[in-house]
Length: 199
Image (cartoon, rainbow, N blue to C red):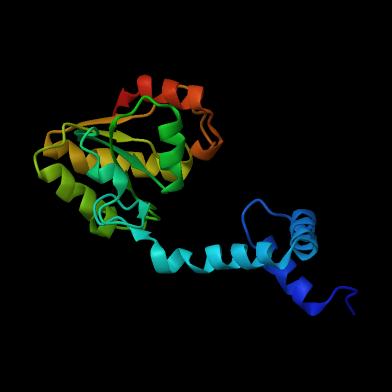
């Protein structure tokens, strides 16, 4: 039998399901919300529940957006000739922190690059190929995570794009093998972009 009310236990259980939130953090957040004015919990709940109603994937790059296409794709100051390919939409913020990239993005968003998959049939890869074949793209920077899956994705993208006549590069030094872009600071990310290599 729990010493906590069932509603509080449910909240703690839901919070624990979030990435980076362990049992102690979930408990601390739940008790904070309980001790705070009711409006705080209501505001948090409303913000969370409206996410799927208001936000969708950009039809061009796959980033999360409230408008179609997203702000980055609509921005005339960003170069359409360079596309930075990332695994997740959250990786865009990491690259942007470096303040050294002024091109456009393409989010793979869970594309399959394992040995048994068919990346060329994946909708996000098909969308990337379509963008490259439009004739406006000169370079594709592959900024997938330096993990086994990320390296496999980079190899597949390079193989698929080489016949298209575009330069395909890979982010370079600064991001250690086995880590994720989300853990890179702005200086490290700037170095990785500056020292990218041709695939």
